[in-house]
Image 1 (cartoon, helix red, strand yellow):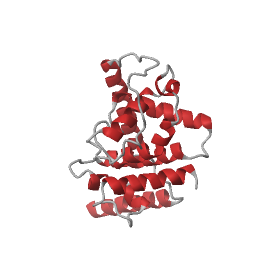
Image 2 (image 1 turned 135 degrees about the vertical axis):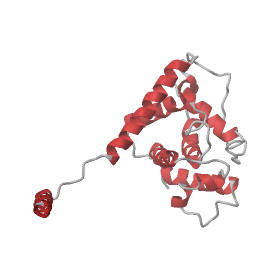
Image 3 (image 1 turned 45 degrees about the horizontal axis):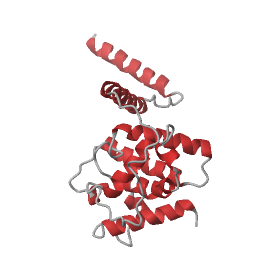
Image 4 (image 1 turned 180 degrees about the vertical axis):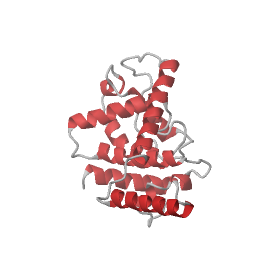
Length: 218
């Protein structure tokens, strides 16, 4: 069994144990990626957030893949660490099934990290904090035994990060939102393929209508 298959099994097992009335033995992988509202019924998700949840499921699968090269893996971890620098969950503060998927697939990796990789100068501080939050926060409601949790020593911090500048973070979030909106607009306004001859025929048809109208008027 590959590491990716193992992490997927862990995800299903964790969901079934934490939400037995929602996730059953017959629940499929496709259903799991769209199960957020069922396990968190008091939380509403916008269309953009639903898309983001699906994207995080893909990212979590890539992080668990043994086939991904080391450089790409480090790049994904770096991007995730930056994303979580100002967020409690992947969506900011809302819980979702994507958080559980990422935890199930990333916790076994974090368990193996030495202290320097966790909290060193180039360590993934925010990922470690996030993992600890997901496995313990009532907001997520996960049933994770103490012996299964990633052991995190909050006092063992090898490098103290500088506090995040609220103004700079607000500007970064603004640019991130604007970029996402621009991408969505670009997709919706993409030019439709031109059918050869169609434009010419439409132009000719319009010309004939104009001539007919002119004849009636005279």
